Amino acid sequence: MMTDRNNKVNTMRENIFAKLGFQWEHTSFPYHELSVKEVVMRFNRSRAKFVWETGHLENNPFTFVEVQTLLDGITVGGHKLSDEDQIRGIASSADMLIDMVAHKKFNFSLDTMCRLHYALAEKEALDAGLIRGTGEASGTPNVFLGELGEYTPPLTEPGGENLKAHFADAASALRLITNPLERGIAAYLFVAKEQPFYDGNKRTGRLLMNGILMSEGVDAISIPAAKQQEYNAMMCRYYASFREKGLGDASEAMGFMANIYTKFIESQKERVITVIEANTEKGIYKGPVVNITDNHFTQAVGKELSVRLSVRHQFAHTRSECISIGENIKVLYKDGIGKVTELDMENEKGNER
Image (tube, rainbow, N blue to C red):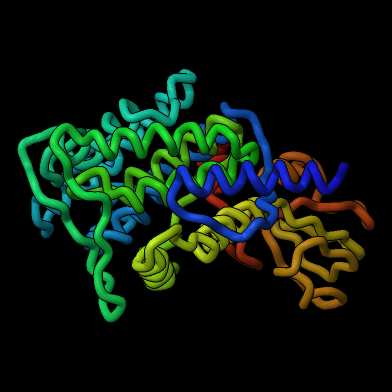
C-alpha cells in the first residue's frame, strides 16, 4: 500500500516537473500561515523596502531614502529619468498586486502576468504587457551568464503560441503543488525560465510568486540587497542547468528562495526574555536575563542586557517604573540588540500622534 502511494506521488511529481521544464529535490517547505489581510498589510507596510530592494537587483542607483521620498510624491534630483521610471514601475506593479490580492482578484494566468508586466515595465521594455511573438518586436533574447555562457529561452514564434502552451502546462502543474511556498517559488522560476517578455521577466515572476503566496496567507518574498551577488550567481547556475537536453535543475534556486523566506519569518518573531532584576526607564529595560528564546540574545544570558521594550509593553507599564521579576517581556527587535522592526517604528509614530 505504502509503495503504491509513493509511486503515485513520484509519478505526479514527474508530471509536474515535465510540464514546468525543471525539477528539484523533494524537500520540505515550511511556511507560516496568516490571514490574507494581515500579509497584505505587512507587504504594503514594507512597500518602500520592497521597491528599493527590487530596484537594487537591477542596479538602480536610487537609495532607500530616495525611494521613500519619490513614493511620497516628492521629486528626487540627480538621477536619469529611466532610473526614476524603473522605480515608479516597480511601485506601480506592487500596488497593482496588492489590490489584486486584497480584492481576491489574483490568479496565475497570462492576463494577470501581462497586466503586472505592463505596470512594471511600460517605459522600460519592448512590447510591455505582451508576451514575445504577440507584439511588434521580434527575435529571441539570450540571457548572458558570464563565464557560464548564455541561456537561450524558448524561441519567439508568431502569435506566441509556444509560450502560451507552456504557460497552460505550467498552470495545470502548479495547481497540483499543495504547498503554497513551493508553488510560488516554482511559478517564479518557470517565468524566469520562459522569459516571456523582452525585459523584466524575473521581476514579473517574483510578483506572480508573491501573489500566490499572499493569496494563501503567506508573507511575500523580497530579495535583500545584501543578497544581490549571491542571488545573481544562483540564477546564472539555474539558467546554465538548461544547457543539456532534458529538465533543468532548480534545486539550488528553490532552496535559496525558501531560505530567504525563512530568514524573513525568523526576523519577525518576537523575542521573549525573562526579567530577574526589574528596572525600566522610558521604556528601556536594563538588567540581566535568565531565559531567552532567540539566538540573537543567547550571548546575553546571565549578563547585563539593555533593550527597548515593544510598544505594547511600554503601554502596559506606563504607570509603573518597574516590571515584575520573572515576567516575560516581548521585544520586537529583529536583528539583535538595538535594532527595532519597521512594525515597531510605525506603531511608535502612530502613538506619538
